[in-house]
Length: 111
Image (cartoon, rainbow, N blue to C red; front, side):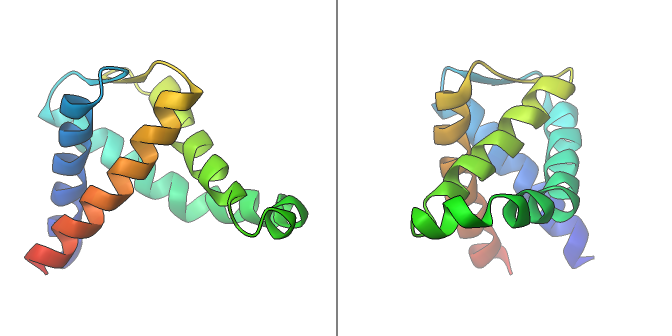
């Protein structure tokens, strides 16, 4: 039940990000649900591999390169899904940052 709540909260966070930023668009709530699911799967499966592969540059930049990895995962999700679109890398960077903040706040409030 808690996993379902987190999934819905992440979809709502994605809708809020799409409302705030003009470079990110979500077609509907169902698209946001699918995008939140895909983002969760990518963050679980692909992101750890990217972190290991980019560990030297992450160490040199004192962890700031993780923001780039997060943006690349967000941008990739926007490019493979039909109802979720990200216009470019900088929109992905800003969107991933705001998405993380909003989903964290919503999870803290409703958990």
